[in-house]
Length: 561
Ligand SMILES: [Zn+2]
Ligand SMILES: [Zn+2]
Ligand SMILES: [Zn+2]
Ligand SMILES: [Zn+2]
Ligand SMILES: [Zn+2]
Image (cartoon, rainbow, N blue to C red; front, side, top):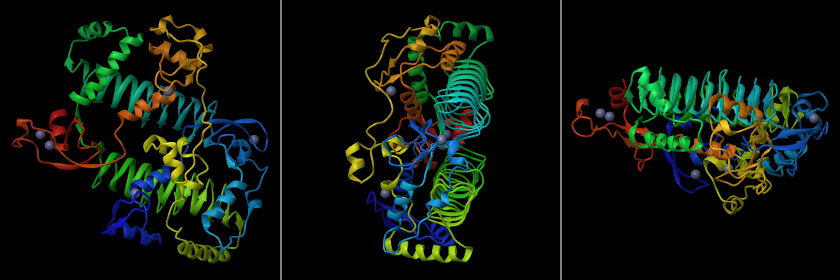
């Protein structure tokens, strides 16, 4: 184990022997930034949810894109980008050994057309990014095989009729404001809910139906504020609430937050069927360290969102069978790839941006089905291997090798990225680092046509679709779209008073941060056999100053099961 000083935040960080082994295996020097700063650098490249309208630079049609119209890139609509109307190799450039790599890479980025956004095989789902195989999905991000999904993020595995949800891992249906949940039907406002139906304002419940404002339930029905009722009594109590009223909903929401914060029992992390693994929201993992939102991971460290991933380090939204990858952002089905951004279906690709279905690329931009290319120029296999090694040696001299692309050359501005969500910085702080800031982000202010929204959804008519509202938090204008109104009417939900982005941030704030702290079990239940307070220590996603009842696995299981 070695202690190093982070070149970004100047704090010390440690590199373990197992990390050195990994770096050795893929022949990269150890990192000079600490793990958190490395993730921030990857965040700075991911514009997941800031969408613009811009004309395609090939067909000239208006398209939805993650690049604001003032960005100095060529942007092609998805049809043109994937089409045969242009050749990425025509932008091929010789590498100049008298200059730094990233400087030349930036010049290539400015020349080669960029994909408007990542949205594949979808119908009526233009306003989606990092998404695929969807039908009628709107303003949603990282949604796959979804149908009628609106204003939601990270919705997987055939979910449908979901509105304002975050992290539905599989098969959600008719959900509203659900977080970190799976296989639920007709549920609203829930965190860690699994296999449940008709549950409202619950926390950590499984196999339940018809439960209300309750926590830590297993296989229960008709539980109201954690009290078991008869079906009749439950229905009677529920009927006392006018769920269609915004005023009622606001009170229930506050009570739900209080239930989570002060009454519910929290497991120190969510880790299911995992062996020898440390992280939060990890499922079916083996030998995973310091990772978050990982499914079926093996021998990995510093993973932030990765389904099916093996022998990888430092990944952000990468997976579905990826191996031996390092320092990547937004990549899928990639093997032995390092330092890449938005690359899909690739093998042996390094330092490349938006390259698809390719093998053996180095320093390429927007290559499709390419092989043995450097700076978009084609070479024979031997030429490629020689030149690649020479450039790597050059990059070692310049100190660039072994580091992810710097935020300075990110094609998107920091305030458009997930960096602004997970690690917010002011404009001054961003510019001081030499990173970029976008002043013309989407949205209007001061154009509202309606001030007082009707309290009950039953009082809302179709005319609301023509109105412009003002967000109660950020003052930005927002509108209601027809599918959204239908959903509210069908599910008896009052109109939201916040814009979609502030609704997203509210859910974001309820979720555990992607960080682990050392902590100890807060349980002092005498029946558990520990004298006084339980002494078990762990790595937890709850920071020490938080007041939730955070229990170790043993105490949690004794209380909940
Ligand atoms: Zn750092
Ligand atoms: Zn086009
Ligand atoms: Zn807002
Ligand atoms: Zn305990
Ligand atoms: Zn205990």
